[in-house]
Length: 336
Image 1 (cartoon, rainbow, N blue to C red):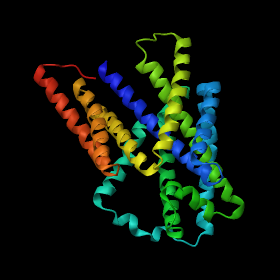
Image 2: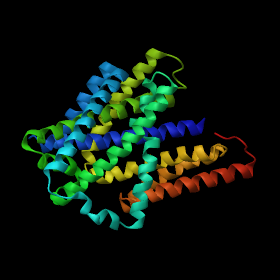
Image 3: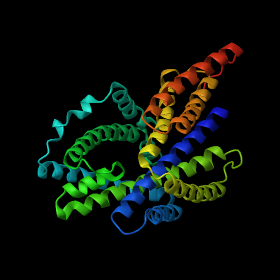
């Protein structure tokens, strides 16, 4: 249906956006700790990812997830080392509690909705053995997601107090590198780099799969060889375009706000479908399309910022309501 095609398209845009963000982060980390220029660093990161994805496919994605799990475990240990070796008491920084109500609500909504549209969470579904393993895995992953988020919040507050002059783009990695003992400082960079690579290959593979299996399914019906070829071509094109965007839009903060708003709109639509499964198809169509236009136009007029989150969520509700009422007035009874 048209709604399914639109959702697939917006999903590809969303995945592509986060791929750009990871490439910006990877390029800045590599250029920051070497003499390689940012442009060349970004190209190197993207080339490595594309090469092992083209040769290993989904198996390579799953195997890098294992590496990512090991990296997260190492990162937790590093965070504990920072807590023990740093005199700063992170919980005394009450600036978090003095945030404006609008920002507090925006960050809370972000934490709730991002997992609903996160490829890093949902792409593991294709690798599980059965539904029981899937349910258990989601419960464990969700618990770790919350625990790691709280731990990361604590360490960022610690870095903010100890090293207030760091640039936002690489503050977390630079902070850990500065606060950790000499023997462990380089490990922080390696851990974050492995996490970036693992996340990037997931985003690139999932976006290419969506293009080949969803957007191009009318031209490719049950032809596995054609699907694989389409995925490889899509990977190369997406990777090249992502490198260009990462070089052109090098501001990771503004880029993150832009694509975060799109991610949250998708998460809101998923939540909307759970709460109102009888919502008419036109309502879901406009709920997906409206925030995309609102985010693009708002960014062009005002630039990117946290306000995009509120704009996108309001656009989802308005679009769903207008589409549902429009369908009801014309006598359409279909639901997604």
